[in-house]
Image (tube, rainbow, N blue to C red; front, side):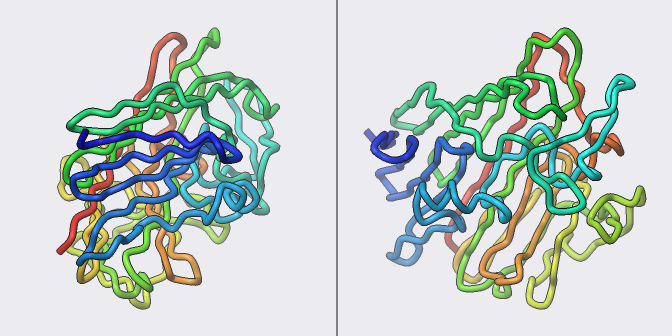
Length: 313
């Protein structure tokens, strides 16, 4: 069979590998956090991994914070102002994780997902992972279930579609995103970044939105990342392609979120070996500023989809 899906249950948690045998492309996923840990393919006869992931499952558990490599962000993204928000005239206080003074990156980044099913066909390999949040944090007393369907197809295309459902008696506030770090070579200074946004969400000194949207056209035609430091959120322009491209002299990575992810957060860590390119359904602190905040009705579902396609140049 051209594609195969393998689940290794001999680790601390299941490790899933999706493989395209024809071109020797493979994707490694952790049930821990639904983490994308590797995306490997052939470049000039060598196998290259473009995800800055973890060395082992043990490292993922011990070092998920504070870098949040490949973390799934839910039910809020990035920073929440001091971990506080109001919903239906009730004040709530998030407890889980803070980079002072703000709560950061949601509540399920270290959740253990269940492997629901794996699929292998001549055209794709896939796995479905799910997790039910059961009000573990007093600051978010609303249960919900999220299901991720990861699919590797021909052309080195990896797609993840997330479905969120719940059975509360009322709509619940919600936002989600992904926090993968990509590496195309020794340093991001050798990379060109292009994406379909000419507007940036202005931040204050604590990286919360100030309420202003400012013009920023640096990346519409592409910009070399040498000398550029980013920890910024951009408002994507609808219906413009390509949505986001990261490239160097030998590799091109195309990131294509659908309309459910209207924001793109980009972070360049000090080591500059990789770059975080984060699809977000809502802006940082959206529980307070309402920028992209969803209100999911009971017994309905919200679906969020993005894809990553890696090619050689």
